[in-house]
Structure formats: C-alpha cells, structure tokens
Image (cartoon, rainbow over all chains, first blue to last red; front, side, top):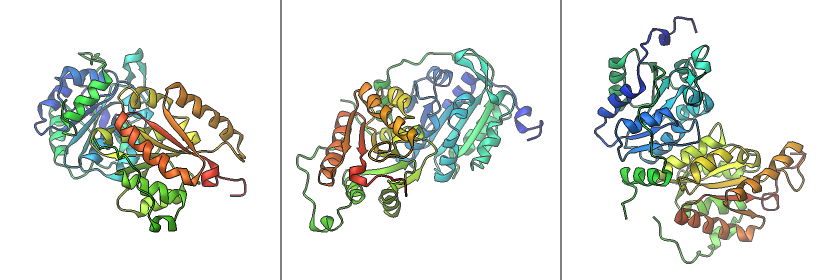
Length: 202
Length: 188
C-alpha cells in the first residue's frame, strides 16, 4: 500500500455520532452485534433495541457472532460493530465470512488506532495495518473506508440492500463511550432472542 | 424449546449395517436438528467431516480458529439454529476465555466434539501435555463432559447430551477417545 491510501484521506469521525446515525436508519428489526468495550457502550447509549446484542468478553468475536445470526436468519439483516484492535485479534474470521458469503451481513469497523479502554496503547492499525486492505485481501471485496458521515450513511444504505457481505471502516476519534452497558449477560441474551423472534417472554 | 424425548429410539436394522462411530454421530446430530457444523480439521475426525460435507442437511465449514466457531454457534443459537463444533484437543485448549466469557455466562448450549489426542499412543509430546489441560479446564467451569470409549454407548451419550445441553442451556464437551475412533498413531 502507498502512503496515500484511501484511509489517510478520510475524516476522523465520532463513534457515538456514527452509531446513532446507523441506528436511526434501522427500521426492519435488523440485528446489531456490538463488540467489547466502547463499541457496545456507544451502541447502548444510542438507545437500546431488542435486536441489539452486547458482547461483554470474548474480544474479537463480534463478527463471528454476527455471522452465526446471519446464517440462522438469512432473511434478517445483521450488522456487526467492531474495533480495530478487536478485529486484529481475529483476522481469520474475515476469510471465513468471505468463504460463506452471507448476503445479509454488514460489518462496521471503528478504527481509532488505539486499545482505548486499556489505556490507549497504539494498535498496528495506527501505523502499518490497513483494515480495508486486510479485508479485501481476506476475500471481502466489498470493503471500503467511509470518507465522512454522509458517505458512511450512504454506504450503510447500500449495504442494507447488498447481495454480498459488506465491510465499512471508519476512522474515529479517541472519545470514550458515552454510556455503559448493563452487564447482565443472561438478560442480554434472552432479550436478544425475544427481539429475533426465537422466543417469547414467560 | 424442543421437548425432551423420554426414550431413545433403538437403532434400525439399516443403521446397524453401518455402525461406525462417525455414522452414529452424524445420524444423532441430524435427529436432534443440529445442523450447523463449524470445525477446525483433525485427522481422526476426517471421515465424520467428509460425510457431513456430503450431506446437504448440514452446513459444514472450516473456521480459522476454534473460538471463532464458538462465536458463530453462539450467534446461530440465539438466532434459532443449532450446531456443534468439531476440533481436536489442542483446539479445545484455546477456548478457556470464550467459554468463561461467552458460552457460560450467556447460557449458550455449546455442543463440542473433541477428538482426543495426547493419550493411548501419542507420539507428540506437545499433544500429550496439552491434553492434560482439557479436563481441568472443563472441571474448573463445572462443564458437563463425557469421554466416549465404546461404540455401544456412543449414541446414548451423544443423544442425551445434546438434549441436556439444550434444555439446561449449558455447554457440553464430548471427548472422542482413541478407544472409540482408533486415534492417530505414529505411522499415519
């Protein structure tokens, strides 16, 4: 990659702002899987929905969990939110998703170049690793950097009608998450299953 | 939620004609509607993986890592689809974090088949060592696990374990011992 990658020309956005923009676009009970830390804190802060799943551990597994939901419910759109550090921990998941080609999966990567929640240590994405280049190289050809908020919204709209998995990466700032997810795994899982129509409340 | 069967149907004469361990596992998975099968390849599991790939009832695919497969199965379960993970002993050894942070606290009925390396003729010291971590990890999380050594007990254990995992919303590990599968020996 040259130093003039598409990434370097993109605007630095704010995770809470773009997460809120995303949620505002969802009108068909789309499932949303939030990765650990600030990613799911901002998903929570953007307003809880029964179709939201908040991952409290298992760093790097937001995309695999979303893939599982997408395979179980091929008629429902599934959106996964992940950080750059988390994704770098589980890069093999990208090629698995590329192999299976679920039509209903949108992956969003918030790239701030830091392991923010542990003390803002730099990730390789800050200097050498280009998330979109890695994704394309893993077989996810429909991967792109969002240039700014309007471009992000346009890319989300496109992905919701796409016939192949989409990965949208955004550069974001170092602002912490706005909210704090209620750490109740059983309730999170049960509510999510209600939201997906798999179960009814007692 | 499925109703637990009170009685395990006996094998039919057709089934008994092919009473291989992998044939029994496949039929028992199918009968329990366990159809999503991510795996990390293993030599001993190869006949099972091959027959799963050949059967359109199953969605069978390799993952890069075992914990990735646990994530996929957790998502699929929450979306209403059952599955099982196939791996070998060394793969199970990578799972302590995802079991303790996802499968157990979120009450996911994760069904795991582990091809047991490291015992009864192991030739690789690393495999022998990593095998010794498996049962302590399972026991430390109080997870249900069974070591299957006999063909005549296989269907009962697999069938009942799947039903128990689903109804109690708890993971289970089914360890396929070399006494059942033949294992992997130095000259193979």
